[in-house]
Image (cartoon, rainbow, N blue to C red; front, side, top):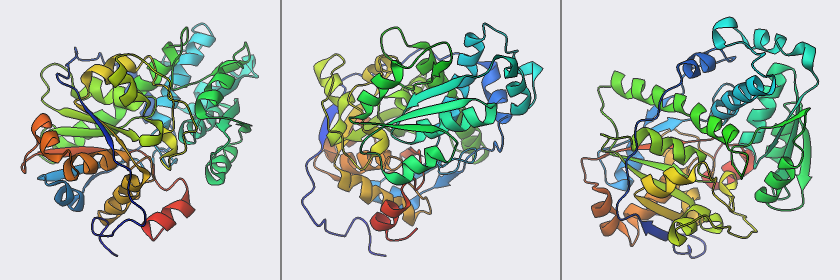
Length: 395
Protein backbone atom coordinates (compact mmCIF):
# COMPACT_ATOMS: atom_id res chain seq x y z
CA UNK A 1 0.00 0.00 0.00
CA UNK A 2 1.27 3.48 -0.79
CA UNK A 3 2.15 5.54 2.28
CA UNK A 4 -0.77 7.80 3.19
CA UNK A 5 1.67 10.63 3.85
CA UNK A 6 3.48 10.42 0.53
CA UNK A 7 0.53 10.12 -1.84
CA UNK A 8 -0.18 13.50 -3.48
CA UNK A 9 -3.84 14.57 -3.22
CA UNK A 10 -5.91 14.51 -6.37
CA UNK A 11 -7.12 18.04 -5.58
CA UNK A 12 -5.59 20.80 -3.46
CA UNK A 13 -6.50 20.44 0.21
CA UNK A 14 -8.21 23.55 1.64
CA UNK A 15 -6.20 25.15 4.44
CA UNK A 16 -7.20 24.28 7.97
CA UNK A 17 -8.44 26.76 10.56
CA UNK A 18 -6.59 26.84 13.87
CA UNK A 19 -7.15 28.60 17.17
CA UNK A 20 -4.69 28.35 20.07
CA UNK A 21 -6.23 28.94 23.48
CA UNK A 22 -3.87 31.30 25.30
CA UNK A 23 -4.47 29.76 28.74
CA UNK A 24 -6.52 26.52 28.82
CA UNK A 25 -8.03 25.98 32.25
CA UNK A 26 -8.19 23.08 34.64
CA UNK A 27 -11.31 22.01 36.48
CA UNK A 28 -12.17 20.34 39.77
CA UNK A 29 -12.20 16.58 39.34
CA UNK A 30 -15.65 15.41 38.25
CA UNK A 31 -17.35 13.17 40.82
CA UNK A 32 -17.69 9.58 39.67
CA UNK A 33 -21.10 7.95 39.89
CA UNK A 34 -20.46 4.61 41.62
CA UNK A 35 -23.25 2.95 39.64
CA UNK A 36 -21.88 3.81 36.18
CA UNK A 37 -19.27 1.09 35.72
CA UNK A 38 -21.57 -1.54 37.23
CA UNK A 39 -24.34 -0.49 34.88
CA UNK A 40 -22.21 -0.85 31.77
CA UNK A 41 -20.84 -4.22 32.90
CA UNK A 42 -24.40 -5.56 33.01
CA UNK A 43 -25.17 -4.69 29.40
CA UNK A 44 -25.12 -7.61 26.95
CA UNK A 45 -21.63 -8.32 25.65
CA UNK A 46 -19.75 -5.75 27.72
CA UNK A 47 -15.96 -5.91 27.53
CA UNK A 48 -13.30 -3.19 27.51
CA UNK A 49 -12.36 -2.10 24.00
CA UNK A 50 -8.70 -2.44 22.94
CA UNK A 51 -6.01 0.17 23.54
CA UNK A 52 -3.78 -0.24 20.49
CA UNK A 53 -0.18 0.98 20.00
CA UNK A 54 0.12 2.99 16.77
CA UNK A 55 3.80 3.24 15.75
CA UNK A 56 3.04 4.49 12.22
CA UNK A 57 0.97 7.35 13.64
CA UNK A 58 3.70 8.10 16.19
CA UNK A 59 6.33 8.31 13.44
CA UNK A 60 4.11 10.59 11.37
CA UNK A 61 3.51 12.90 14.35
CA UNK A 62 7.10 12.87 15.58
CA UNK A 63 6.31 11.65 19.10
CA UNK A 64 7.48 8.69 21.19
CA UNK A 65 4.21 6.79 21.20
CA UNK A 66 0.58 6.96 20.19
CA UNK A 67 -2.16 4.89 21.82
CA UNK A 68 -5.50 4.45 20.08
CA UNK A 69 -8.65 3.53 21.99
CA UNK A 70 -10.34 1.43 19.31
CA UNK A 71 -14.13 1.80 19.55
CA UNK A 72 -14.91 -0.04 16.32
CA UNK A 73 -16.77 -2.72 18.31
CA UNK A 74 -18.46 -1.63 21.52
CA UNK A 75 -21.28 -3.77 22.96
CA UNK A 76 -21.95 -5.19 19.50
CA UNK A 77 -22.10 -1.80 17.78
CA UNK A 78 -19.43 -0.13 15.62
CA UNK A 79 -19.06 3.01 17.77
CA UNK A 80 -18.66 4.28 21.33
CA UNK A 81 -22.02 6.07 21.48
CA UNK A 82 -23.84 3.22 23.26
CA UNK A 83 -21.99 4.09 26.48
CA UNK A 84 -23.57 7.52 26.71
CA UNK A 85 -26.90 6.60 25.15
CA UNK A 86 -27.46 3.63 27.45
CA UNK A 87 -26.61 5.49 30.67
CA UNK A 88 -28.68 8.54 29.71
CA UNK A 89 -31.62 6.31 28.79
CA UNK A 90 -31.42 4.48 32.13
CA UNK A 91 -31.29 7.72 34.12
CA UNK A 92 -34.03 9.31 32.01
CA UNK A 93 -36.29 6.31 32.52
CA UNK A 94 -35.73 6.49 36.27
CA UNK A 95 -36.87 10.12 36.19
CA UNK A 96 -39.73 9.40 33.78
CA UNK A 97 -41.16 6.67 35.98
CA UNK A 98 -40.60 8.82 39.11
CA UNK A 99 -38.11 6.41 40.67
CA UNK A 100 -40.24 3.35 39.92
CA UNK A 101 -37.13 1.81 38.40
CA UNK A 102 -35.01 0.45 41.19
CA UNK A 103 -31.32 1.17 41.63
CA UNK A 104 -28.75 -1.00 39.94
CA UNK A 105 -28.35 -3.10 43.09
CA UNK A 106 -31.85 -4.51 42.49
CA UNK A 107 -31.39 -5.90 38.97
CA UNK A 108 -28.71 -8.03 37.37
CA UNK A 109 -29.60 -8.15 33.68
CA UNK A 110 -31.12 -5.91 31.05
CA UNK A 111 -34.10 -8.28 30.93
CA UNK A 112 -34.78 -7.70 34.63
CA UNK A 113 -34.58 -3.95 34.07
CA UNK A 114 -37.02 -4.20 31.16
CA UNK A 115 -39.42 -6.17 33.32
CA UNK A 116 -39.72 -3.27 35.77
CA UNK A 117 -41.35 -1.15 33.03
CA UNK A 118 -43.60 -3.69 31.37
CA UNK A 119 -46.83 -2.57 33.03
CA UNK A 120 -46.32 1.04 31.92
CA UNK A 121 -45.68 0.55 28.20
CA UNK A 122 -45.88 1.64 25.43
CA UNK A 123 -43.02 4.13 25.50
CA UNK A 124 -40.89 5.30 22.59
CA UNK A 125 -37.32 6.64 22.70
CA UNK A 126 -36.78 9.51 20.26
CA UNK A 127 -33.44 10.79 18.97
CA UNK A 128 -31.89 12.77 16.15
CA UNK A 129 -28.69 11.42 14.68
CA UNK A 130 -26.12 11.42 11.93
CA UNK A 131 -25.79 7.68 12.56
CA UNK A 132 -24.13 6.31 15.68
CA UNK A 133 -26.07 7.96 18.51
CA UNK A 134 -29.42 7.11 16.95
CA UNK A 135 -28.47 3.49 16.41
CA UNK A 136 -27.30 3.29 20.03
CA UNK A 137 -30.62 4.69 21.29
CA UNK A 138 -32.48 2.24 19.07
CA UNK A 139 -30.39 -0.66 20.43
CA UNK A 140 -31.20 0.38 24.00
CA UNK A 141 -34.89 0.55 23.08
CA UNK A 142 -34.72 -2.95 21.61
CA UNK A 143 -33.04 -4.34 24.72
CA UNK A 144 -35.71 -2.78 26.94
CA UNK A 145 -38.75 -3.66 24.82
CA UNK A 146 -39.43 0.00 23.98
CA UNK A 147 -40.22 1.69 20.69
CA UNK A 148 -37.62 3.80 18.90
CA UNK A 149 -38.16 6.74 16.54
CA UNK A 150 -34.95 8.07 14.99
CA UNK A 151 -34.80 11.26 12.91
CA UNK A 152 -31.95 11.75 10.45
CA UNK A 153 -30.80 14.50 8.06
CA UNK A 154 -31.46 14.07 4.38
CA UNK A 155 -27.79 13.53 3.46
CA UNK A 156 -27.23 10.54 5.76
CA UNK A 157 -25.89 7.64 3.71
CA UNK A 158 -27.92 4.52 3.12
CA UNK A 159 -25.65 2.18 5.10
CA UNK A 160 -26.12 4.22 8.27
CA UNK A 161 -29.87 4.51 7.73
CA UNK A 162 -30.15 0.77 7.29
CA UNK A 163 -28.12 0.18 10.45
CA UNK A 164 -30.66 2.21 12.44
CA UNK A 165 -33.59 0.37 10.87
CA UNK A 166 -31.92 -2.97 11.63
CA UNK A 167 -32.42 -2.22 15.34
CA UNK A 168 -36.18 -2.18 14.81
CA UNK A 169 -36.48 1.61 14.85
CA UNK A 170 -38.85 3.80 12.90
CA UNK A 171 -36.73 6.11 10.72
CA UNK A 172 -37.85 9.58 9.65
CA UNK A 173 -35.75 11.55 7.15
CA UNK A 174 -35.78 15.30 7.75
CA UNK A 175 -35.32 17.51 4.68
CA UNK A 176 -32.53 19.51 6.26
CA UNK A 177 -29.46 19.38 8.47
CA UNK A 178 -28.67 17.43 11.63
CA UNK A 179 -29.58 20.52 13.65
CA UNK A 180 -32.99 20.63 12.00
CA UNK A 181 -33.43 16.94 12.84
CA UNK A 182 -32.63 17.80 16.48
CA UNK A 183 -35.33 20.49 16.44
CA UNK A 184 -37.84 18.08 14.93
CA UNK A 185 -37.05 15.43 17.54
CA UNK A 186 -37.48 17.93 20.36
CA UNK A 187 -41.01 18.70 19.16
CA UNK A 188 -41.99 15.03 19.56
CA UNK A 189 -41.46 14.92 23.33
CA UNK A 190 -44.55 13.78 25.22
CA UNK A 191 -45.89 11.41 27.87
CA UNK A 192 -45.18 8.39 25.66
CA UNK A 193 -42.21 9.79 23.73
CA UNK A 194 -38.95 10.30 25.61
CA UNK A 195 -36.25 12.29 23.79
CA UNK A 196 -32.70 10.98 24.34
CA UNK A 197 -30.44 13.64 22.80
CA UNK A 198 -26.69 14.02 23.11
CA UNK A 199 -26.94 17.77 22.51
CA UNK A 200 -28.71 20.29 24.70
CA UNK A 201 -30.95 23.33 24.35
CA UNK A 202 -32.61 25.70 26.79
CA UNK A 203 -34.70 23.70 29.24
CA UNK A 204 -33.21 20.38 28.07
CA UNK A 205 -29.85 19.89 29.74
CA UNK A 206 -30.00 16.91 32.10
CA UNK A 207 -30.16 14.05 29.58
CA UNK A 208 -27.22 15.37 27.49
CA UNK A 209 -25.26 15.72 30.74
CA UNK A 210 -25.98 12.06 31.49
CA UNK A 211 -24.74 11.15 28.00
CA UNK A 212 -21.44 12.88 28.77
CA UNK A 213 -21.26 11.16 32.16
CA UNK A 214 -21.72 7.79 30.46
CA UNK A 215 -18.53 8.26 28.45
CA UNK A 216 -16.46 8.15 31.66
CA UNK A 217 -16.29 4.36 31.32
CA UNK A 218 -13.95 4.82 28.34
CA UNK A 219 -11.44 6.69 30.47
CA UNK A 220 -11.63 4.25 33.36
CA UNK A 221 -10.76 1.49 30.90
CA UNK A 222 -7.88 3.54 29.49
CA UNK A 223 -6.51 4.17 32.99
CA UNK A 224 -6.58 0.45 33.72
CA UNK A 225 -5.00 -0.43 30.36
CA UNK A 226 -2.21 2.14 30.58
CA UNK A 227 -1.53 1.11 34.17
CA UNK A 228 -1.22 -2.54 33.16
CA UNK A 229 1.35 -1.48 30.55
CA UNK A 230 3.33 0.58 33.04
CA UNK A 231 2.44 3.78 31.20
CA UNK A 232 1.50 7.06 32.83
CA UNK A 233 -1.11 9.53 31.66
CA UNK A 234 -0.71 10.78 28.07
CA UNK A 235 0.90 14.14 27.40
CA UNK A 236 -1.82 14.98 24.87
CA UNK A 237 -5.28 13.76 23.89
CA UNK A 238 -6.70 14.69 20.49
CA UNK A 239 -10.47 14.38 20.34
CA UNK A 240 -13.06 14.91 17.64
CA UNK A 241 -15.77 17.52 18.21
CA UNK A 242 -19.33 17.48 16.90
CA UNK A 243 -21.60 19.14 19.43
CA UNK A 244 -18.75 18.67 21.93
CA UNK A 245 -20.12 15.93 24.19
CA UNK A 246 -17.13 13.58 23.96
CA UNK A 247 -14.69 16.50 24.02
CA UNK A 248 -16.36 17.71 27.21
CA UNK A 249 -15.85 14.28 28.78
CA UNK A 250 -12.19 14.34 27.72
CA UNK A 251 -11.66 17.76 29.28
CA UNK A 252 -13.33 16.73 32.52
CA UNK A 253 -11.04 13.68 32.73
CA UNK A 254 -7.71 15.02 31.49
CA UNK A 255 -7.91 18.69 32.46
CA UNK A 256 -8.77 17.95 36.08
CA UNK A 257 -6.69 19.82 38.64
CA UNK A 258 -3.24 18.32 38.93
CA UNK A 259 -3.23 16.79 35.43
CA UNK A 260 -0.55 17.82 32.94
CA UNK A 261 -2.31 16.47 29.82
CA UNK A 262 -3.07 18.88 26.97
CA UNK A 263 -6.19 18.50 24.78
CA UNK A 264 -6.65 19.20 21.07
CA UNK A 265 -10.14 19.45 19.57
CA UNK A 266 -10.70 18.61 15.90
CA UNK A 267 -13.73 19.13 13.66
CA UNK A 268 -14.57 19.46 9.95
CA UNK A 269 -13.98 22.71 8.10
CA UNK A 270 -17.55 22.40 6.80
CA UNK A 271 -19.00 22.25 10.32
CA UNK A 272 -16.54 24.16 12.50
CA UNK A 273 -19.11 25.26 15.06
CA UNK A 274 -16.88 24.87 18.13
CA UNK A 275 -13.89 26.70 16.68
CA UNK A 276 -16.03 29.55 15.39
CA UNK A 277 -17.84 29.80 18.73
CA UNK A 278 -14.50 29.95 20.57
CA UNK A 279 -13.30 32.66 18.22
CA UNK A 280 -16.51 34.63 18.83
CA UNK A 281 -16.43 34.08 22.59
CA UNK A 282 -19.99 32.73 22.66
CA UNK A 283 -22.10 30.04 21.05
CA UNK A 284 -22.76 30.64 17.36
CA UNK A 285 -24.73 28.81 14.70
CA UNK A 286 -22.81 27.74 11.60
CA UNK A 287 -25.29 27.50 8.72
CA UNK A 288 -25.46 24.38 6.57
CA UNK A 289 -25.14 22.48 4.47
CA UNK A 290 -22.77 20.50 6.70
CA UNK A 291 -21.60 17.92 4.20
CA UNK A 292 -18.24 16.68 5.44
CA UNK A 293 -17.43 12.99 5.08
CA UNK A 294 -16.95 13.15 8.88
CA UNK A 295 -20.71 12.72 9.09
CA UNK A 296 -20.93 12.23 12.84
CA UNK A 297 -19.39 15.68 13.29
CA UNK A 298 -21.70 17.54 10.90
CA UNK A 299 -23.17 19.86 13.53
CA UNK A 300 -23.92 23.56 13.30
CA UNK A 301 -24.07 24.46 17.01
CA UNK A 302 -22.17 23.21 20.08
CA UNK A 303 -24.08 21.75 22.98
CA UNK A 304 -24.58 24.33 25.78
CA UNK A 305 -23.88 21.57 28.32
CA UNK A 306 -20.48 20.81 26.75
CA UNK A 307 -19.57 24.42 26.00
CA UNK A 308 -18.15 25.51 29.39
CA UNK A 309 -15.61 22.69 29.26
CA UNK A 310 -14.64 22.67 25.58
CA UNK A 311 -14.36 26.46 25.39
CA UNK A 312 -12.07 26.74 28.42
CA UNK A 313 -10.17 23.46 28.70
CA UNK A 314 -8.91 22.73 25.18
CA UNK A 315 -5.47 24.04 24.25
CA UNK A 316 -5.81 24.03 20.46
CA UNK A 317 -8.79 23.87 18.11
CA UNK A 318 -8.37 22.79 14.50
CA UNK A 319 -10.88 22.48 11.67
CA UNK A 320 -9.69 20.23 8.86
CA UNK A 321 -10.64 19.33 5.32
CA UNK A 322 -12.04 15.91 4.46
CA UNK A 323 -8.74 14.94 2.83
CA UNK A 324 -7.05 15.05 6.23
CA UNK A 325 -9.61 12.63 7.68
CA UNK A 326 -9.07 10.25 4.79
CA UNK A 327 -5.30 10.49 5.29
CA UNK A 328 -5.79 9.68 8.96
CA UNK A 329 -7.97 6.66 8.13
CA UNK A 330 -5.23 5.23 5.93
CA UNK A 331 -2.58 5.88 8.56
CA UNK A 332 -4.62 4.16 11.28
CA UNK A 333 -5.13 1.20 8.93
CA UNK A 334 -1.34 0.79 8.82
CA UNK A 335 -1.51 0.32 12.60
CA UNK A 336 -4.31 -2.24 12.32
CA UNK A 337 -7.13 0.09 13.36
CA UNK A 338 -10.30 0.21 11.23
CA UNK A 339 -11.52 3.76 11.74
CA UNK A 340 -14.33 5.54 9.96
CA UNK A 341 -14.24 9.14 8.82
CA UNK A 342 -15.42 10.60 12.13
CA UNK A 343 -13.40 8.07 14.11
CA UNK A 344 -10.17 9.26 12.52
CA UNK A 345 -10.87 12.98 12.98
CA UNK A 346 -8.79 13.30 16.14
CA UNK A 347 -5.72 12.04 14.29
CA UNK A 348 -6.64 14.21 11.29
CA UNK A 349 -6.54 17.32 13.42
CA UNK A 350 -3.24 16.38 15.02
CA UNK A 351 -1.66 15.55 11.66
CA UNK A 352 -2.62 18.98 10.44
CA UNK A 353 -1.28 20.72 13.53
CA UNK A 354 2.01 18.82 13.75
CA UNK A 355 2.93 18.35 10.08
CA UNK A 356 1.39 21.46 8.53
CA UNK A 357 2.30 25.15 8.55
CA UNK A 358 1.28 25.55 12.19
CA UNK A 359 3.65 22.82 13.42
CA UNK A 360 6.33 24.93 15.19
CA UNK A 361 3.74 27.03 17.02
CA UNK A 362 1.59 24.00 17.84
CA UNK A 363 4.46 21.97 19.29
CA UNK A 364 5.61 24.90 21.42
CA UNK A 365 2.10 25.78 22.59
CA UNK A 366 1.24 22.18 23.50
CA UNK A 367 4.67 21.34 24.91
CA UNK A 368 5.17 18.39 22.57
CA UNK A 369 8.59 16.82 22.02
CA UNK A 370 9.98 13.65 20.52
CA UNK A 371 9.47 11.96 23.90
CA UNK A 372 5.76 12.86 24.22
CA UNK A 373 2.91 10.36 24.35
CA UNK A 374 -0.44 10.84 22.61
CA UNK A 375 -3.87 9.30 23.10
CA UNK A 376 -6.40 9.12 20.25
CA UNK A 377 -10.02 8.01 20.42
CA UNK A 378 -11.05 6.14 17.29
CA UNK A 379 -14.75 6.52 17.94
CA UNK A 380 -16.18 4.38 15.14
CA UNK A 381 -15.34 1.61 12.75
CA UNK A 382 -16.30 1.40 9.08
CA UNK A 383 -19.91 2.54 9.48
CA UNK A 384 -20.04 3.19 5.72
CA UNK A 385 -18.22 0.12 4.34
CA UNK A 386 -18.24 1.28 0.72
CA UNK A 387 -16.69 4.62 1.59
CA UNK A 388 -14.12 2.94 3.81
CA UNK A 389 -13.05 0.58 1.02
CA UNK A 390 -12.80 3.49 -1.42
CA UNK A 391 -10.71 5.64 0.94
CA UNK A 392 -8.45 3.02 2.50
CA UNK A 393 -8.29 0.63 -0.41
CA UNK A 394 -9.43 -2.40 1.54
CA UNK A 395 -12.21 -3.54 3.88
